Length: 255
Image 1 (tube, rainbow, N blue to C red):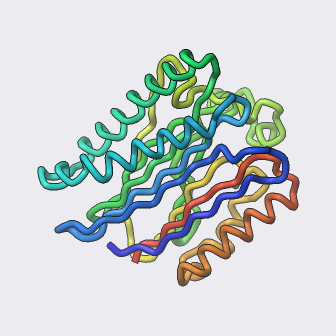
Image 2 (cartoon, one colour):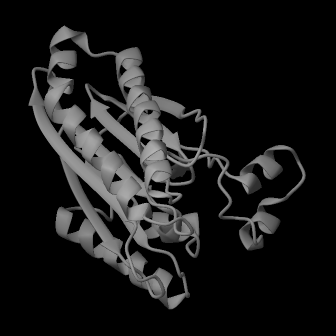
Image 3 (cartoon, helix red, strand yellow):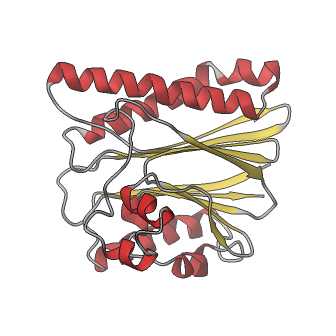
């Protein structure tokens, strides 16, 4: 696999700090190119959310550079990837939580991490940042770990009610501020031309999936300049629609 990629982040129209963090790392292996994409959304209502998101990004970076090469050499498979992702989540949940207690603040972060390797994608999700796939349509690959998603699943709230609910930002868990976490894991085959979007909730609250697909389908995203301009376009569109959160997204096209 070969990749085109782009990332963009914006502090937004209201907040004084950008608590989002993102990572794109690529490496050559005997089975072709490998790509790690990670997006973390530090909790906007919690102090030092940018510390939590940056710390988690740095741990993924360390893992990619120091531990992943030996895993590839041993024979990387789905279980090994998910075990490694889970270990990072559990370890950083404890470390960030301990740091918060020591300094007397509450901090946390979502995470959506995606590894592309040998024709497959592997995802870990904690919180409400999302991963989408664009091929002949747009498909949300992750499920939000939120109060409103649980209410929808239980039949107590409709998607229409959820979109305007005052509780739409209430997370069931996040890295650092939850005593216990349970990451969700996903995997799937990758086809040539597939485009993938990782984004925080601030990037997608005011945009419909149809609007995303109109500009992020494989026919539209022909090169990295267009990919970057597309992320800027949707960021500015969010701001014009009065989105108040930080706004961050990653685009990956597989060729």
